[in-house]
Image (cartoon, rainbow, N blue to C red; front, side):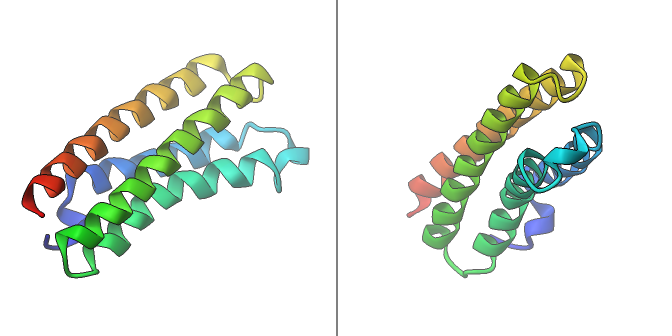
Length: 119
């Protein structure tokens, strides 16, 4: 598959994780080890699984890690919905993050389809 850093979806996931870190700065301090940490971890997991999977040497293994990244993208979105319900940050920031993670999920799904076709 090549270098993970060349994957457009990894690049987008990297930017997304940075944005998640910025927006979660607004979350209440009491959530530092709760929703803040979980949301950040799940966002980083998207890019990390792409990196790990691309180093496994086969499209089949990469596909497995792309599927894990898909799961992490759903986890992040769920956390963002709860954060919006609890008004932990500006609604427009959380909505923007949700739209971005949905786009990343679409990119991951397309990559998974391509990898399934190559297996």
